[in-house]
Length: 239
Image 1 (tube, rainbow, N blue to C red):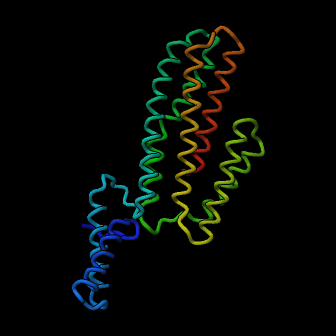
Image 2 (image 1 turned 90 degrees about the horizontal axis):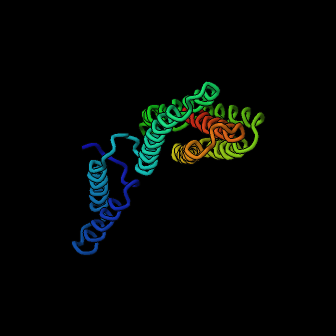
Image 3 (image 1 turned 90 degrees about the vertical axis):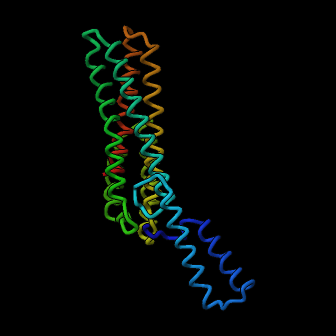
């Protein structure tokens, strides 16, 4: 059984504290004896709790593991939804003049289907308590986000603004020696949820649009490009 940091497991700390109090006050044992015993109990309890967790991410941070597992599930759901969208688009967009639009939608679906593997790769890089995000990598991501922000408009600009703010906050955490991984994963979760919302809007529009109407097909194109924009932001965070 692999040892775990008891500070990540409040129940283990509580049990260790109870052992310490009982040993000192009830059994009248010396604190010099009971403190290491209580610490050992807390450490063993944390190891037991960790062994019962279904995850195999080995991040040495349960909160981060939970967030990353949630992101993995979100990415898998988005990938499945993208396959449904691809099937519907292939069935509905059949005219020669719609082939370009079909290609744009299919490309967005392709990008979405890649997300689970990209998130899994990120989880692998974040494993271990010493795999903190480097200030250099975060600054590189910030530079790319700011460059894209200067050339963006509308919804893409709003999303990039949020991304830039989040990266600046994470850089401050990293510069202070704090673990910025969880904040980075939370930013990633927000992006994937937003992308899922756009994908749903695209699917709804595809089902209800008059595909002979140029204005409505333009809306479909716009939603597809918006979905691609979100996925580019995801790519930036996992790079």
